[in-house]
Image (spheres, rainbow, N blue to C red):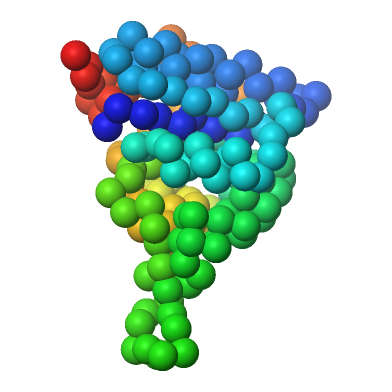
Length: 198
């Protein structure tokens, strides 16, 4: 991998200004550039156009999505981005429809991806504490992991035939933040999955 497209999916609210996601985005960009990667960046707070965003996905060897978890998913502005960019990319640039054809009805749904060989990584910020996941005694998530919660997002990238890198998550960021600890963990995570290319 040499080229990484970074997306900052944060939507600014009065109670959440986006400093953490902005810092994690910048940390990723700094790491990538320092280690020989080419980068492109889109943030939901900036203007964007559909065709250039599709081109960024085609250009990249990996897509890194940095996003807060809002109501168990991505913020509305990134959902809007997906509804436009990913839908228009179904013309063969990101996928050739859903993979099925009238000539071959045996083809399975979701097999039309054209970004084969490309990777993606999710980096998530949660108000939920880490202990609320992966533990069946926790009543809300019932033993599910952050990846289980974000299975629809994983499926979106799988629809393009992309492969996952390990998800990174910061937890309890509003009531019990441990920012320096999270930053140190993220540096290690980035170093593992985006090592020096030189």
